[in-house]
Amino acid sequence: MNLAQKAIEKADWAIWQQPLAEMPRLQASGILILRVLYALVRDLLDGQLSLRAMSLVYTTLLSLVPLLAISFSVLKGFGAHNQIEPLLLSLLEPLGEKGVEITERIIEFVDNIKVGVLGSVGLGILVFTVISLMQKIERAFNFTWHVAQDRTIAKRFSDYLSVIAVGPLLVFSAVGLKASVMGHSALAGIPYADTLLNLVGNVLPYLLIVAAFTFIYAFVPNTKVRLGSALVGAIFAGLLWQTVGWVFAAYVISSTQYSAIYSAFATLIMFMIWLYVSWLILLLGAAIAFYHQHPQYTRLARGEGRLGIRSQERLALQALRVIGRSFYRAEPPWTLDRMAQEFGMPGNLMSEIVEPLERAGLIARTGSGSSPAFLPARPFDEVSAKAALDAVRDEYAPGRRAPVVTRLDQTVEFQLSRLDTGIAEALKGLTLKDLALAADEGDGRKAARQAAD
Image (cartoon, rainbow, N blue to C red; front, side, top):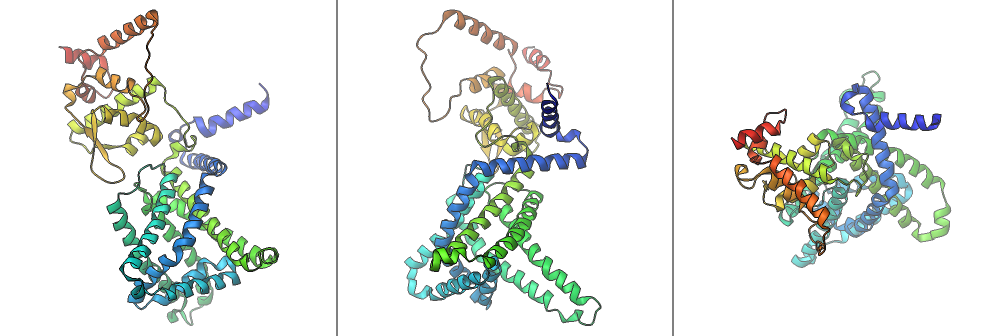
């Protein structure tokens, strides 16, 4: 083995094989950052984030004017509708003069929308268009967070309309806060007051962006997102958004090629490119938040990872043990995320273990929301551990027809039947309740003897 191979193996051990819990805090943080950066590059090369960002560009172009029209109506009720234009100007600032032109056009479109002329049907279509945009955004974030289930229709309308109604007020409050801080006269005459105001003026926009991104990352995905993880993703996305904005502004201002090539379409082209870059940055920040909360996903790409039969059996019995133990001890029930973190497994692989147990009628979901808990579906003292193993072994992928084996080798069948008989004998008398309440050292044979006696 040459030196290069030894170095690669040593780096692989240091980054991937060594548990983070065994490292000093500073070293663990550095290793986690390397893992997350690797996962981000892998996701970008996969192309799914780019495709979803492009899809959101198309949806944004269709829904931007209706969204601003509803926001305009909300702000108009508070006499603050004039704040939409400064907000758009700040968001499109990297486009330079083209951003000013686009803002003027959008404001003209919004002003031309007369809610009274639209009628109930037109108003309904307007609201539906905005909700469709929110749904598309939610699905993009759910994909990043490996969430397969969207919000229910009722929850979708209530949550989306709440954001549409409250969001403009939060934006108005943020803009008003910035104006009051920058124009505060109480600092007049204080030494270095101008320097302090300039510093606040440079930092405050970034803080507002981080706050907005944190809210998006915590609210939009249909799962429970820790505030700390949302904040980490927001800080990364905010820094990247500001940096890319400066680079984009310098490029747009200094470049005349797009105007020469696309002529009148140059403004629209640059607007679409900036929308794409903004959505891609927002999705990258969501990925950062996801990997911060679920570091076990950093090594596995989407769709990778398969559990062997032995691992499936072990995890199934372990899941039944913790679910039953919490139930009989009147402790809080276990959720899928909690089991995934406790067992060090990605959530999608843990779901492949829990779902067969649900379909077999051994456990059942309880509660509503994005992270339901699990309880025994029937008394565990009436279910043998062998029956639980059989439920996992006999499970076949739902929606697919299991192949029928019509000819079996008698020798193989005989040996497998002996193996099955041996397992049944070893687990004789052991119920899921015995397994759940066994001592923490996990002496299953002792529990089985006690149950048999």
